[in-house]
Each structure stands twice: as C-alpha cells, then as structure tokens.
Amino acid sequence: MDVLVLFLCLCFVWGLSEALSFIRNKSKTTRLNLPPGPPPLPVIGNLLSLGSQPHRSLARLSHTYGPIIKLQLGYVTTIVVSSPAIAREILQIHDAIFSNRTIPDSITALRQDELGLPWIPVSPLWRNLRKICNVHIFSHKRLESDQHIRHEKVQELVGYVRRSLSTGDAVDIGEAAFKTIVNLLSKTMLSEDLANPSDSAKDFKDLVWRIMVEAGNPNLADYFPVLKKIDPQGSRRRMTVYFTKVFEVFDGLIEKRLRDRATAGSVRKNDVLDTLLDAREDEEEDVDIFLIKHFLLDLFVAGTETTSSTLEWALSELLHSPEKLSRVQAELDQVIGKGNPIEESKIARLPYLQAIIKETFRMHPPVPLYLPRKSGLETKIGGFTVPKGAQVLVNVWAIGRDPSIWKDPDMFTPERFLGSEIDVKGQDFELAPFGAGRRICPGLPLALKMLHWMLGSLLNSFNWELEGRVKPEDISMEEKFGITLQRAQSLRVIPKPV
Image 1 (tube, rainbow, N blue to C red):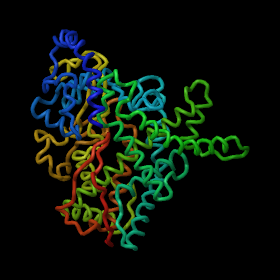
Image 2 (image 1 turned 135 degrees about the horizontal axis):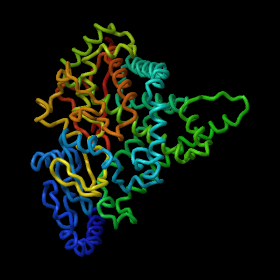
Image 3 (image 1 turned 120 degrees about the vertical axis):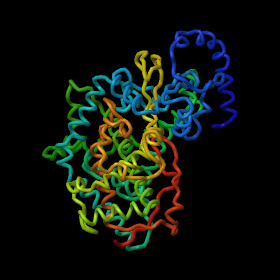
Image 4 (image 1 turned 90 degrees about the vertical axis):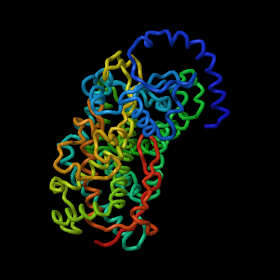
C-alpha cells in the first residue's frame, strides 16, 4: 500500500482514537483476565506484528507469550490460539459461542458475507446450504455413485502427464491438479467440464488465488471501521471485480440449464445444479439465482485451490526427500503393480501414501489460519477471558510446527503417522487442517479421496525430475500467503518412464 495513503489514513483516525482511548482503557475489558501479548502501539496497536506472513509472525509471538495471546489490531481485539488443547475449547467445547465469523471488509463485496456459506451466521439459510452439501454433494452415497467421475478425471490427469512425457515438456503440477479438481467439481455439480482449454484453467486458477489473497491480506478497513466507507486499499473494489468474473462463468451455465429445463422432453441431469434450481422453485425454500451463484463460488474457490496446493506441496516434499519417494513407490509397486492404474478401493491398503498426505497437512495446512471466528459471549478459555465480540484466530500452521507436540517438526517424516490413530477429520486437534465442529469443511471426504488417488497415480505411473536438473536438496520450499498457502514458485517437473 502507498505510504502516503497509509499516513493519511492513520492521521484520519488518530484524533478519534485519542478521544476514545481513555474510555477504552477504563472500560470493563481492562478488569478482565485477558491473555498476554505484546504491548500495542498508539492507534495501530499490534498491526505491525503481522508482517507479510502472519502465520509465521503469530507463531513466533506464541513462543514468547504462550499458546493463547491477545493482540490489539487497530480497534479489533484479537485472540490467537496456537495449541491443540485451547483449539479444542474454541472449536468443540464452546463451538456454539464461537461459530460465527468476523467479516473482512473485502468479503462484503456483492453480499458474499450475507450469502457465502463460509461466512454467513449459523442460521436457517446456513443449515439449508450445509444440508445440500451433506446430502447432495459429499454424502457417502453420493460419493459412491460419483466414483466413476473421479476415476475419469484422474485418468485424464495421467493422460495429460503422459503426453508431456512423450514430448519431454515439464508439467506444472499445481496447474494440472487444479484443472483436474475444477473439472471434477463441475462435472459433479454442473454435468460438464468447466476448464477445457489449458489457458482457461490457468486463468481461473489465477482468479481463485487473487480471491484468496484479497481475503487473507491485512486490510486497514478491517481494523479501523471508520475507513470502511472509503475502502482505502481498494480491497473490496478488487474483490467485486473477481466475484463478478466468476459469476459471469456461472451465468452462462445457469441460463443454458434453465432453457433446457423449459424444453419439453428434455432429460434432467439430476446433478447439484438441478437440485438448486428445484429448491428455487419451492416457495418454502429461500433460494434464488444470486444465492446459487454464491454457493457455486464457495464450492469452487474452497475446493480447488486447497486441494491442488496440497498435492503440489506433497510432491515437492517427496522430491526434496528422495528416500521417502522411493519408499512410497515401492509400496505402490507391491500393492498395485508398477504403472498400473489405481482403484479407489485399494487406497486403504496404502498406509505410507496416507501418512504422506497427513504429514503434508501437518507441515503445509491448506488454510494456515482458520477463517476468523467471533466470540458471541465473554468466555473463559485456557484460564483467560475472551471478551464478547473479540476476533479469534486458530493458528493451524503453528500447531503443526510445535516442537512440544511433534519431534523434529520441520522435518518431513511421514513415518510418524504409521501406526498412529491421529486423523484429519476434526477430532484430533493437533492435526485438523479442515477445521472442526459445526464449521468443519464439508468437502473433507471428497478432498481426501482425490488427494490420495491423484498423488498415488502420479507416483505409480511416472518417475519425476525437477525442471532444469535442480538437485533435490536445492528445491525451493518458500511459500506465499493468502487465505491458503501456495508455493512461492510453481512446481515444474519432468515426467520420466517408470
């Protein structure tokens, strides 16, 4: 952000902050047993403590002040949690109190805060949308019936890599995985592929990443409410542009489906879009076209970037540790047979592959800081008081790198999960990349199936060499921060015959 704009914005709120500071300091919260934390600066509080990678900055602060700390981010009291025990209190024991969100100003673009499943309060609308997810998209019955679609998309991924093998071209793993997930979701929900030409997949991936960055980056309007009207960093304006571009994609698909449904003798698709349009025609359901577009936006944005990024990190870590790569390929050879296609039912017989996915989630959680929660009541957590209205952040990345929980936490060691009962389904808070409680990610079952199937297929069908003959020890593991964590450099690798 431009320094001059920042200076003017701070000057604008300085007078107001000084006038209110006495009242605030004498308020009820000063008498509470609040968590410890770094002393705030005038006006801006602890904003400078966030840095360009907040998950790392907040982890360092937790080493100094403990597993639950208080920050004053402008006018927003923020509680940061960095331990499994305290995360359990927030997400399970007191889940109802902390089930709603603090809404970033950028998310108010096109009413996403009112209609977007990850952001809306727990309410009849929220329950209705979750029911659609749980019954019509991610239920065991639906996932079983859609297994042929997953098989088709994984084979398309393998076929794409095989064509690169014949030409000697490098494969951008994140982009290839993203296209696979986009087409899986669109085939399941819309009965057609959304990303056919390779350039359209890349454009959509870039658009999704921009949404993630805009929603995750610190924004002055979030910390100084008086600035919301002027949107000083332009975050809401940019997000409006990004949402509009995604909605334009859905508009054509929805209009085509409405025409098909109005045509006599047309065959129903019986997919998610038909389910949503049926709900729109039901007077008892509060569903309209705008809500349908928001619902599709949530599913595509949440489901594509997180899954493709996790696959990219998993293969990066394996290429960085050749002995781990050799071990998982040996397991695949023994159970599946080298070069053979993997059946989904065989994944249960691949414990080392499963351990690799868990270890990737530990080291590179797709969402390093859970979406912000909001305290509905003044509550005792970890022996301290969390005030009503406080923003609560759970630092999943810090929990995964905590040396008091994990031996050699910065080492990629899938073996730690062999024979372990720790799972990622929201009951073990030392490893909960999908969240927990009523706000747990509804797409967890599909994400796990696709990650294991895609990674296993890529490892069993090909050997891999880093582009430019980069040595394994020299591979960059730097990351860039949005709501999700991407590799700073795309993983480009050259497939070789097995």
